[in-house]
Length: 403
Image 1: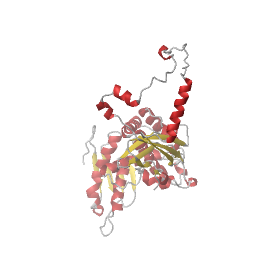
Image 2: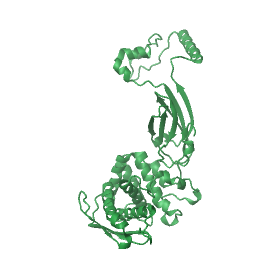
Image 3: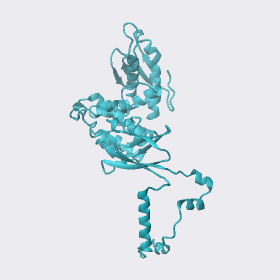
């Protein structure tokens, strides 16, 4: 099959015996073509004249322009979903290796994640572009929680030499792919991430990048400081666990409580006793405003409604939001890994609203952070990471009111 790219038209080719059908005749060449198109979109146009997928009995292995991939019906001609999707995934993965490390030529023995991890990330994107319900093996954050909360004694940072890793597959394939998906969907956003990743691929094609070249290019192209992410996700075994520590509820009302009445009465009494409040201003400062150098006049006030009536038309006033309910939420970082806080508010009428606070909310590595949400409707539930995009290892502490 000819694959029409922007600057080239390589051939997608499959070689297989009759024992591989109906799987190979139906899917293999189409998958090779789909892989070349998707990877080229994320990186650069495939520069070689062909990409060949050969049917093998077991596993998969890559070489420049050619790869061997498993996946055949059993002796009775039966094809299980596991065999079908396994074959599709391995074809995408092995063809994808033409890009990493065959063209962007990293050192696999020293830094396996630079080709297996980046390739697994693009494999995930290619599988989802083929079928949004594709049962991907690597890349889904929610499927990687068990590894992240595993015994630290048997975990190594991604930035470990390939020959000392115990959980090789999860460390070199899975964790980098999941991390890049988090970076794309939660931290940077798809548009900025894709631009930066494409810059890295083009800057280092036919060259020999190191991990630092990847890290620096992603920051250079995006103008985003990602030191905290590389430090936590690649250089440590820290995990994500953000909880809702407590929620304080407030509401606005035109009927003051007895406590508030007493406070207002006391405040008015104090102002009356003072008569006037002197403003202390330094007239030697260059921004000194003479109009401000006067005593505080307690009569120079107007109600909010008076101010609105004088300065806004009835139509403009109708568009102004008037929140009545306030929720002061204290978040706690129980895990060592910094991460943006994705918060979903569910209102009493069933509608929902999502807000994202960037990782800089923990900028001093503080353990707690507080944010107040103003709403026009009562909030019945607050949830952290409702779509499970951050590999938070304990979702039971992510919900208020507790389920």
